[in-house]
Image 1 (cartoon, rainbow, N blue to C red):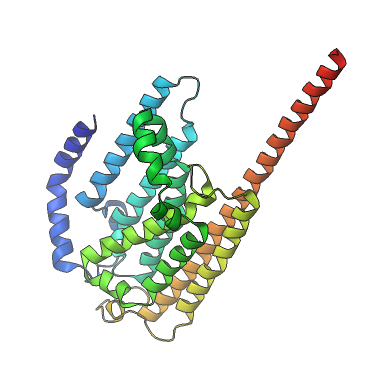
Image 2: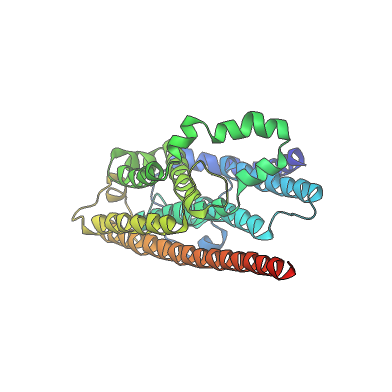
Amino acid sequence: MLRLALRATAVALVPTVAPALSATALGHGAAATSPDLSTLVTGWSFEAHVWLPIVLAIAAYHWAVRVVDRAHPGNRVPRRRTVAWDAGLAVILVALQSPIGTYDTTLFSVHMVQHVLLMMVAAPLLALGAPITLLLRLAKPKVRRGMILPILHSRAVRLISFPVVAWVLFAAVMYLSHFSPLFDAALESEPVHIGEHALYLGAALLFWWPVVGADPSPWRLPHAVRIFYLFLGMPWSSFLGLAIISASVPLYPHYATQSRDWGPTPLEDQQLAGGIMWAGGDAAFLVALILAVVVWLRAEDSEGRRIDAKLERERAHLRAE
């Protein structure tokens, strides 16, 4: 089934992928034309290196869910996890292949929308999909014990998934990429741009893994620590946005030297980008904090009911004696 999905997608994309890749190779970093309604509706890209992995990820996940559901009809994969997984991959497509991807090298503000979508929306949705749990349920006991679990509990995974390390990596990736030559290099080179997006998504997945808590992790955070972890993440996104807003000159030569006769000036565009990081980052963290509190309250309520039921059984046992 996966092979057929890949083959069908490849056949469908071949007529459009080649021109898109050629245009990217020849004109990456060149200012796009002024957007209009038709551009916003039809300005989607069909790049094989984006679409094919996403189609494969969707097909593989749904296949695994069907296998697990057939094997465990009394303990099926929750529907919300499949919805979250599909939504996370859909957000990646919107960020990279919609008109957002078309104008990310023309407007810094659009580029910032792209980064917020990848790190603050797509990553937590993918974590909610619990792919590691699905893989553990799908794998045979020998593979689970001999391969998957040893990797999960290896020193390397324990190190990079340690919440403090994951938090620092998440913040470091954002700050170092925005205040180093990497950001401008990504605007001028498609391979570097792809690597930048992979770096953002990877760091974000590590950050959201212990917060979401849907998958097993070497480090299980109590609910109160999850909230504190999220709370500490909010200021750095605000400070990054404020730093970009406060810059008195354009930070990136790529945007400053474009010959564009429409839209905001490079400095105005940069200030808008900083505002998007500030507002978008704070909004994402605020939503995550609210959800974390709700989950904590529900867990406490469930634990209370469990204790009450246990006490009731003990009282019934005493009365029976």
